[in-house]
Length: 399
Image (cartoon, rainbow, N blue to C red; front, side, top):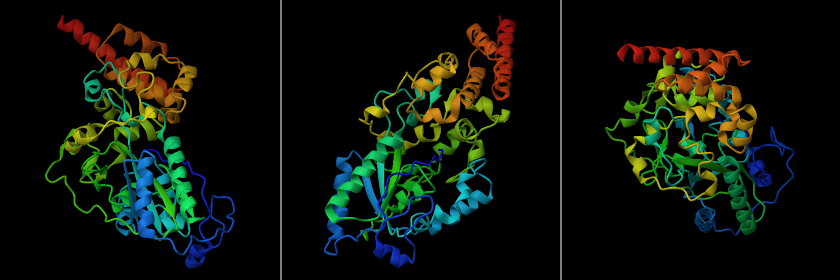
């Protein structure tokens, strides 16, 4: 998934924490900090940690954990992944040096991270059924409703304000899939789950269909036990199910072959060798999660914002391909889909239509896009038309 910067309002880290770190009161990328008083010295931090978990659950988070900021093991893993070039065009993964794996470099004074989990699978959503219906579009289930960033940001802000009301001013900064944050590594250390063979964070009672958010803080809270035990065992269902073979070894994904990367992060042409394997997946891919045995423990989310909009959990490819740019912008307002833009949306849909069974309606729709101003779109449309015409010829021959 993309890392688009959505920094939240933050409170300056305490002067005491800054002195401890030997840092000034001005942080890169943020407005100048005003000095903040330290939390009351008579705070019972064990009790506060327990109350933070309670407040988090009351705000709708399914799980809250607390960790320190030592991510040395994750840093070594990230360095190997980057050196192998598995990040493809996601330059942001390497751009910030060690800020991603050393929270105090990103937010000076950070000594703890509060990690939260929010489940997103809406009830009665069609999943594997749509994958077996090639004329329909498959949109990753996290993206069928409204964008999660704003919802989680507001709740993390409320959590921070609740803490502040209890202890007084303290330093914090919240993140939701934003800025260089090693969110899965932090969540594992906070006891929320373990790394599956598909590199997703898995929870034994919730699978992997959840969002993560973080609150960096200077509060010396007690930490949770990290999730050390792995439950995958000999199961390799996710590796077997990956349509493009992107899981190159346990816990290692070559993003350049991952359909989520190809349909969301890649700006140029989708390599032809992956197009057929994409099937009807036009925004993201959930295959490695859907086949995971722990997905059966996933509970439906009651969040109204995550309910599918515009039938995006079951809509026909042709319907989406027929959207004008104005309709696309209107119907994806507040949606994660908006970020890829109309051009790449048409690119992805053209691949889906090229993989669909032949129909005269699909051929006609593709022909209408042959003169589209973007060569990126036109090239994918030509590929799809060739596939449709080949299928038509095969039907005639077999008749």
